[in-house]
Length: 79
Image (cartoon, rainbow, N blue to C red; front, side, top):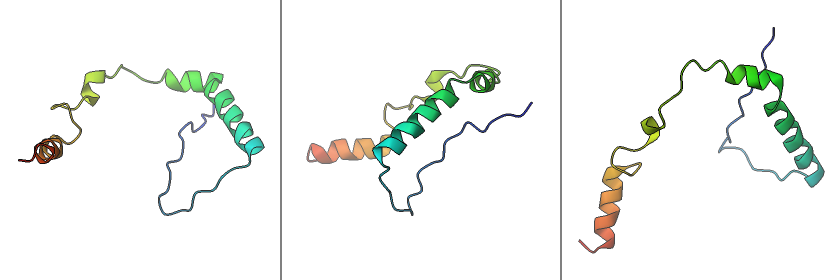
C-alpha cells in the first residue's frame, strides 16, 4: 500500500509571490479538499498513536516571548 505525502509546502520567503488565475485557484482548492477528505488521508490521520495535550502548546507565561512582552508593557507605560 503506497501512502501519499499529505504535507503542504511552506512559503519560501526568498521567492516572489504570484497571483493565480481565479479558475486555477478554485481548481487547486477543490483538489486539496478532495485529497484531505480521501480514504488515504483518514488512514494517515489514524497513524497518530496518542493524543497530544493542547496545554503543551500554551505559553508558560501567557505570551510567546514573555521577556519581550514585559518589556513592551513597561515601555508603553513609560517606565
